[in-house]
Length: 32
Length: 235
Image 1 (cartoon, chains in turn orange, brown):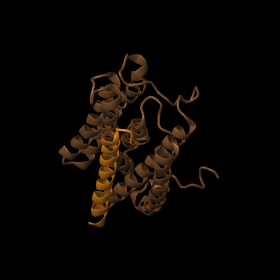
Image 2 (cartoon, one colour):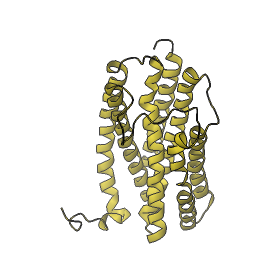
Image 3 (cartoon, helix red, strand yellow):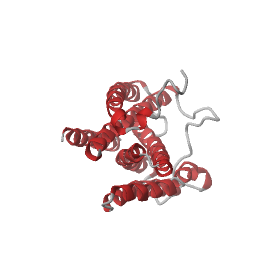
Image 4 (cartoon, one colour):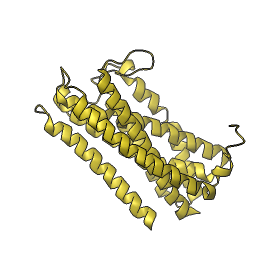
């Protein structure tokens, strides 16, 4: 990433972690 | 296809909307996954490295779609809140309630990714400029909407109070959008506009627009799944 790996993966990592968390929480809620 | 052939009022009932929402959510979820894969492939393997910003610019493929959707979702949320307030329709209030968490999430993602883009390009994680501050206010509006609804026990009153807040808060959306024109901001102006040619390479723009579509499909899918949860819990 040309020296910008921390910034690029820091942005993408948190984004997809939060989206995955939303999906998991929503699936658990819909199963109740 | 006439207006009567699509039974709009028939689907305004939570019970009849429930199965339709499930079908639409599945298709939109699948479309979001495919579009996201295609957009990321273009973003990381096809789009070239930027001459000025290097590879740090690749944050654009999630930052801009998240920022666009954060504003768009708020407008849609305020629309459903207004419809619910005007016509006292249960499903409209449920739609507004279902949109808020995803809107808040995408607003946070826009702020977070913007911060990670700002540090290498501006030299700072955060600045109190008009675009960043108005986007932060948008996050507070989403959180305020959810907190207000959660704080009132009577569901009808909670929905009406939330709707009023959503409608008043919509004034913040044009402020966010035009902030880079109205004030002298650290944040750059719009790279994509309906009135002039985009100021970026075609492959970068293609990747960004595909990711915007992916975020759009994702938002529809999770909102409809949440609406189904609300229907099950409330009806």
